[in-house]
Image (cartoon, rainbow, N blue to C red; front, side, top):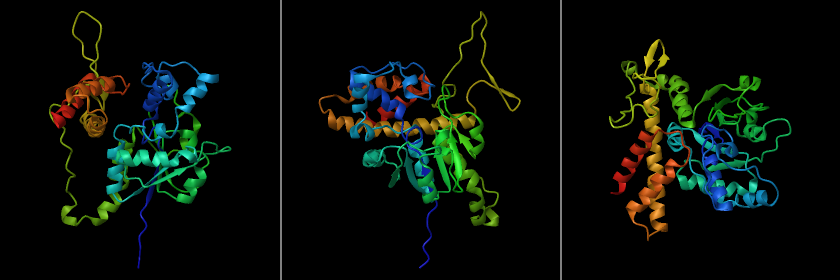
Length: 329
């Protein structure tokens, strides 16, 4: 019997699959009773994103104690990550999470991913001590994936196996993803969803071409239809002056006032994925809080979502809530 082994794509967890920075705020609230305000929504590090103090001594120990198994089991998904993983899985890849988490929290991470609906059956924990090279290097060299996706450049150092190294460039303020070591990276992407679309369309094109009959060689892959009610300009610019002005970007010799079609499609996919995640969250909260009416619950979700510091425009938040309410009301 000839058994073909699936190709593996190795994925980091925090910052790629899971939104650790968002969960950080919940841990802070659990430790100190106050949900922190957003200080810099574009900060790479959680302690810079939130308006929190630098901890030491007893308060630091109290905060660390809140990062127990229950914390690692309940980290929300990064926007678009669930859709990205299902796309890669449906394309025939086996997805393995390789995380620099302590081994004792490996089961919690696995439960977290499974409960969120990720098609990931294997979690490899490596710890975060690498002795001059990535702490994930040894595990990746044994795993031999075709690609490794991480959002932390130092975790790509010293990997000797032949694989595609994809760096997620997120939240640029204070990012460690700078400098000469960027030469080690094969590709960079704004999110895992962006990587999955690029990987399946660009690198997968060679394999697809071999399977397409010559009569279909000119067939065009159908585009995703973005509904008319989805926002076209989620971040309208306000320019000073007595006369009306428009803020525009120059792209390929053209001035673009709002989103390009590609940008709008990507944001639509991200927001649609958020709607699906919020449906599951709302259903769980309904079971946990039978005393709360559905309109009150949805209002609470709306308020909480807008406090998260997600890089979404007000019109996109409005669109998400219209779609979420339509699922229940």
